[in-house]
Image 1 (cartoon, rainbow, N blue to C red):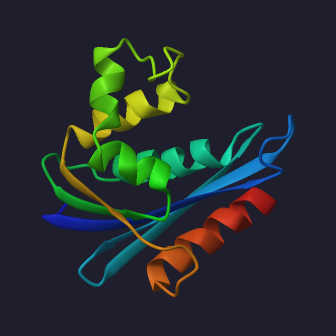
Image 2 (image 1 turned 180 degrees about the vertical axis):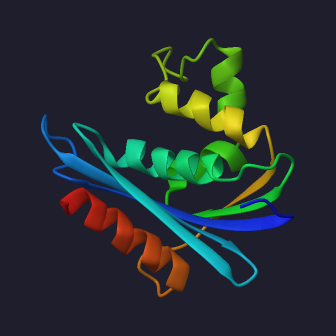
Image 3 (image 1 turned 30 degrees about the vertical axis):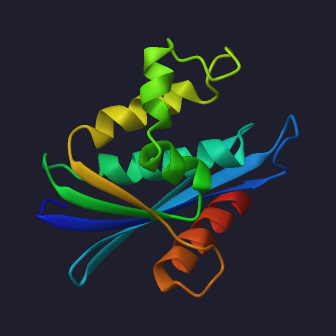
Length: 149
């Protein structure tokens, strides 16, 4: 989808989150004007947070042209706050250690995501989950379905 402005609604789900064996799903809805594309997938032995990040990564990988204005909507405070509060700046400065001097969780995905975000003009917006936002609900349903398949 090459264009001037894209909206992405992304979500992750995890069946059995926190257990050693589980299934997670990720999904995203990409919209430009009236054109819409959906993507989704499944991972095993994962977490809800990883699925939230992977949904955003996979969606941004669909944006082939560089320097595109992208608005990312997510109900994940973990994802949105990282960018809006610039947690990643401190992580990078501290050698990918958090405030407790422990390795940042999911840093493999954060690094992939930062690389993709750097190719575009991306703004992150927090939406309330399960509040009737049509595209957020669509991403949620796709992610939950992917985790079940």
